[in-house]
Length: 404
Image (cartoon, rainbow, N blue to C red):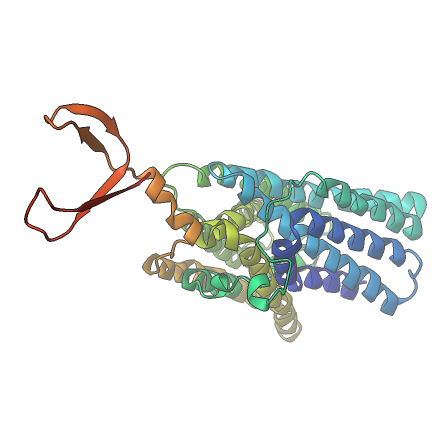
């Protein structure tokens, strides 16, 4: 069953680039509806193959993961289309919902399994997944500019994203940082079970991470919208804090209170990191490129999130101790936080849509004068006069044009 869950999570991240492209091509609403339909169908079909691992890998692992990817990317991308000033807090509020369900669903599923069994539980979860299709209708569709005739790869795939140097550096740094990011979450239960008294609650640290992660998404989402706040600096702070706290986990052995404090801190800065993914993508790539930028980022993240815990497991088996795996897991986020300073040296090239905005916002104040030199009216129109080289002012020809 662990393999099936890992396959579902890996598929969700790995297919996210396709979800980004599809969102730009057919729209937010259709992509989300399709994702909900596939996820719900996969979960429902799983109820017929509860004893067949291979079938579950296809229905639950691949189908449900694919549906999740098609629904998740548009849910982040839609925010930047309708929110600008409060993008951080809106993104934090939306992502906090996933934190709430992360906390609640294990208890809900456990209760359903005890009351109805695994078959009925999967079918109930299929109905819950089907609600995504209803939520899709809340996404007001935006216009996409892909021609209806003779569509080329350039029309579908936004090449400006992969040509954006700042975005490529940001994505690479995040990928490096995530090699150790998931390790504490995967091994926390066993870490508590082995290194703490038997009466210690093994689920409480994960619960604390989930709670403060939700709080962090709201708090840092609000902070990210404040004037003069650099969102990339906030994300650097989150990686540095997560890295240090991960390396401090081995020191908490025998001190359960210290473990809870570390878990609370990890959750808080986890929320900071998650809530800023969407806003920073919009900052770097603009509204038109953000959808595919988010999808491509999540696709790249699937590699370290899958490989990191696997390598940590190999080291754990060899050392028979959690000390070295946790210390090594804290190094990549720490290095990533420092590497992000490189972004300060790279300027973001404005898109055509954004480059036209200053012409309307940075008006040039002009004064229209009469022949006698009196002020007739004051306008905010940039007026240019071009005259020929004829020195005879009377016969000189001039051409005037204005820009609003």
